[in-house]
Length: 89
Image (cartoon, rainbow, N blue to C red; front, side):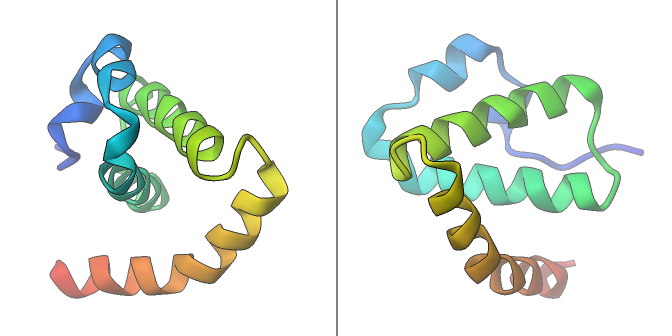
């Protein structure tokens, strides 16, 4: 099954690291794309590794590395984000 993730997910770790800190909206969007595709079971191991890097980047930049702050945000946003993606299918 072919996945449809942003091209950045298919890129190397170097490309992910090259995202500027000004691109937090882009990082957040990519994170949710990863999350949605993973829940659907439509992600390869290489993409999962890249998504893990995106998660770490988001957690560190948006939540100063605080997992509990990230988790509170994730719980608040998950339904809305997934509903948007289900509508687009």
